[in-house]
Image (tube, rainbow, N blue to C red; front, side, top):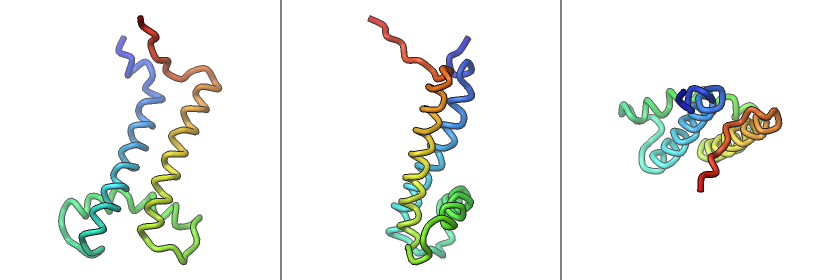
Length: 102
């Protein structure tokens, strides 16, 4: 059986969290060059994907912080979430193992 489907409970959440994390990074980088109200389809996609997560992070960050700083904190929270999920699976003994071929 394919290893991906054997460990779907690891790969799918990890992939989704990574996709949101890298989309946040793309939004941060693109945001350095374009205005927040830009109507380009790529910018709209970045905002559509990342706005729900930014709203959650915005509730736990001080309101004095600017949007780019909140995006950086969001990326850090997602990294921590991905690592925590892997540690949780390792502790339960159900994490995917790497092959130690020789």
